[in-house]
Length: 218
Ligand code: BG6
Ligand code: MG
Figure (cartoon, protein in one colour):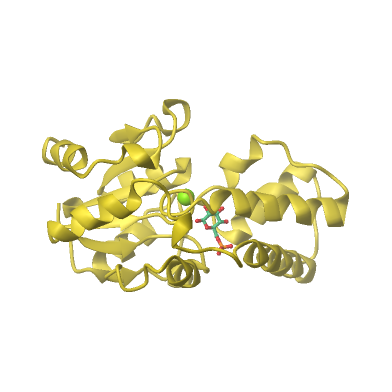
């Protein structure tokens, strides 16, 4: 296990809830409609534009490109406002210990987030210097569930994806890790993340030794 490819939202920090809160506000303000809880999973791990497509599809609405771009920008503003008070206290339980153990074992860390806000969030969490690389989602051809961002994240730290683990909380993200040929570690429930090679219910259950053992037995 030479590298760890981390998703950000919902794995390192509890920002996944803010994404959906911002989408809900946008939809309420512009279309006076509510979004059901079940739509959240369909937007997890999925790029901003693809998430907006999922939402407009649900609403049965089509908008011209200009309005589409304006809606995406407005969602991002609402999201960034929700992130204003983010600090290292918002790092999810178990993550600081896991990162420390990985560092101790010379595992290199690379961010494989679909979010354009990745560098900004790592900075707010005080984790910018902890990561050896950040894969840029604007530079990859296809978003999750395609493997591209995980391939890029592995390449950024100079390792074959097969020598890396990928950590994810989304359906699309686990599919992407598996397609990249890395070892998928899911954080969530078996009903959604049954395709993860190793699954834990929440981040506090992420144990370095258990991940390493499962990785060696893959
Ligand atoms: C992912 C989130 O990490 O980033 C998605 O799980 C989000 O919900 C995507 O749509 C893109 O994020 P951003 O910050 O670029 O809008
Ligand atoms: Mg996530």
